[in-house]
Image (tube, rainbow, N blue to C red; front, side, top):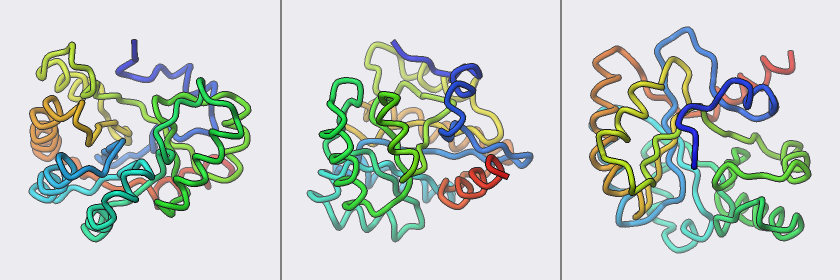
Amino acid sequence: MYLVKTPQFISKLFPNFIWNIPRKESVIYLTFDDGPIPEVTPWVLETLEQYQAKATFFCVGDNVKKYPSLFQEVKDKGHVVGNHTFHHLNGWQTDNVTYLRNVRKGAHAVRSELFRPPYGKLKPSQAQFLNRHYRIVMWDVLSGDFDQSITQEQCLQNVIKNTQKGSIVVFHDSLKAEKNLKYVLPKVLKHFKEKGYRFEVLEDNAKMYKKRKTA
């Protein structure tokens, strides 16, 4: 069970998390979780390049360690990277010490202050600690590309119908999501490009967002 569109009341419950970046301009923030892996990530990079789109990749530290040249390619192409823990741990199912050490290990591998918890699951105690050291990035649109029970067209409509200015959209450069992703991503890029949208990275804008929130 997952929510395609994050309800406003949830984002208001956790105001220190970044759910979107309020923009008057037509800008979208595409994000990719779980990579980099050689089976999917190079295709994502190539597809983004075709549409002059930039994105933010929340990388699993273990994959960064396995595929350092691919990780470097993500950065070399002008994309931003974030931390997705070292072993893709579920915060709800992991004791605090183990989880926080894994986050720190992931941050060391990725070298980023951006952090997205796998599955979006954090215990309040974990979130309280992490929020002092990282910028916790969630989302307001979850594509559902990992869900093999939905059709490719359903996955596409999840994004098309729910994305708006400033939305943070989640995709996955993973084997599980590959089938849906390869159908949906080019169509999403084409659709929003034709509507005059730009696809930007999160890092600098996330800093701006935090400044606005604390101003």
